Image (cartoon, rainbow, N blue to C red; front, side, top):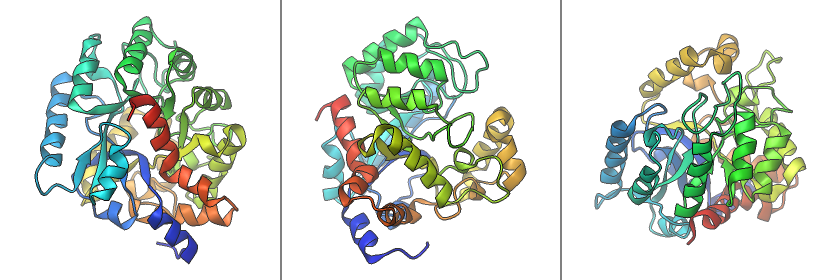
Length: 342
């Protein structure tokens, strides 16, 4: 990790740190401990998992987290996050990146909430029963069932994530929600034109709900598609500056989109899947820098262990300590409390 200032190190150690998106985990916690991370929104089921697969995958996490010696604590309400930290555990926010497991059965939302799922993304890149993903060419918007799903999520207390969702569907969903909505891991299209990035209109609409934009160190979303060099911390900070300029420091958080595994070879199948199934999102980046998980993040921050470099960079840009704390986790904890209660 790059050397950071004593002030940044002290602030990062003291701050509540919540990563808005980890896309997979095999149970390891060492990189989180090294990076001072207190809680994560973890994708606990496969991007395209059906009902049965999702139940099995959630069951495995419940089993892991409820063992007496587990380093994890499942988060059900916002006050559980600092509670997990006080216990010396990592807060596990169970989330999805696709609502495919509910199919067209909205009563399953209550079931999965009872099992502990607290964040759901409408769809993963493609169209499902609820709306269109960001790689659908026609971007048909939110379906009537999608609107009813959002009403149920608001009532039950499940956070709505729009990170991989299409433009019109994002705007429709923000308008339909009575509670704050989230972009847990998405950058600004005005800065870098990646298919996964969000327009200024979407960023403003999410903020207008009282929600948050979780900027990401994921390389394809930071890359301007012009430079011959892998995206860097400076590229990431351009997205931070743009989002703050649009909606202010109270509406920003971060979501790395990291894998959290003991051996990166374990995610090779996912890396290949995203390249083969979604070439519009990744092919140019992979051609330029290789299709390897090690090159998919900005050069200075490729692991949760390196997150203190973000704190150092924000302080160096003149951010107040209060705003840095908000970015690192307090903003997300506040908004999740508004959505979930507690």
